[in-house]
Length: 516
Image (cartoon, rainbow, N blue to C red):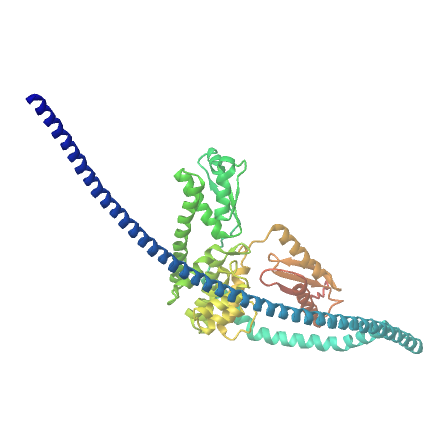
């Protein structure tokens, strides 16, 4: 019994304990559930609050964007409205202009029609007037029994007969006076000047030859598919002539400066051995820069040779460029130095300013240094250059007048013109082909032989003198002066020639007897 009671008591105790544990767990679960519900409620409240705040912010932002968009739309509408107004104004203006042009075209067309009618009327009147004049002349010729051509020839023949002797006598007297006063002095002055200054004559040509180490170099200069030769020609501006000539190529260009730069460039490439488009352009750029320095040195050497004073550095460069310009095959710088020396020598003989004469002679063709870059004659360009660098008025006048484009105001201007003619007229100074030379000689003799009373005409001194031998029984002394002047005028009007041509008419009467 005791054991049963103990077991029963134990069972009751365990049951009660279990009930107590269940109650305790139920109470704990209720407390946790309450806390969880509270946390959930708090989270919901916080989320609602954030949601309301976010909605407010979004509403504010959308309101601001709406205001901004409205402002931009309003501005665009305003711009579109302004553009439409401008377009309307322009359309109205164009309509008015089109209307005016249409009216003007109508007026011009009307005027043109009126002019055509007037022109037609005038032509008809001219035809009628010509017919009337022709009829009147025919009537007058019938009445006078003398034609118009015959009357004109008769009058002209009588006037010529009356005036010929007087004109010839006047020409003879004036030429005699001029010769007495100027001939000897001019001859002595020119002879002395030419005797004191004589320089070599160098003829420039338009091609240059470059020697090659071997014929293989021709192929390297041409390059694959001709790319090297095309690059050389496009960069330097010259033409390369590669033919069957052994170990040589020819450079052709009318610009001596380009020709010289191209020659040095090709020679440098041959020595270097590397020949390709990039290297060609690199060497060309370097040679061009070196050539600029060389041009300045050439200009300084010319100034030093003439012992001139201070000259602007840019003007020195232009003087150096003359080394690479030619005129009829004559080097422009060599020609300018010759003119400077001759003008200086003549100035010293006449007591003029020698330094100023040399300066004018050196700069007289300075326009040729840029006449291939700037449009205009070398005289106009030279005058502008001299004014730009503030040269003396004597120098400016000498440049402007050495081809008689303007009046020669100073003695030095005349000396520069004389020196210029002397330098150009020296035998071999300028290029002249054999064919042109023969044609000029033949034309001179043909002009001389074309006059009545001429026995024979001879062109002498390379075409610089014509001697016309006349028949003494047909041409008297006075008529020979008239013939010389007529031949001079005919040569000046019909021929192109360098320098001057002297005309000499020779009349000789020989009386012979034989004593027996």
